[in-house]
Length: 154
View 1: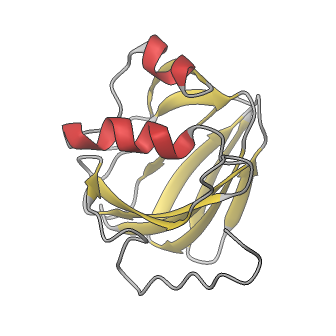
View 2: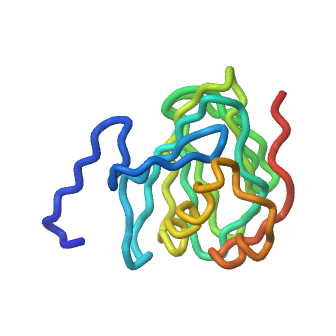
């Protein structure tokens, strides 16, 4: 991407016009980094409660911004409930896990910096239409360590 390239992505759409599902949610790529050295920003829209397994990123900071709904977040030893307008940074190499925990509806922006292999990870897991499977090798291949199960949300 050149410094003069405009990247416009309409509301509710993916930069590439593609559809990706994680079972309880859909994701739309908003900003991508073909070389992995810039940011990856995605919008995650939840229609049910749930979230990914506990993990850590070796080389990416992960930033969350809640657009709508309620999300339970654990980063290191901190446990927080985030709502619309709240944001949280999960620094690289710090274990974290999170889930949509409100009424089952939610919208969150997630940014990874640098992007690393995160776009490839989401492209690899979304064809299953489910949260990423608990396969340590899959997570390791994309620069993460799988540490435990997802957060329970009733």
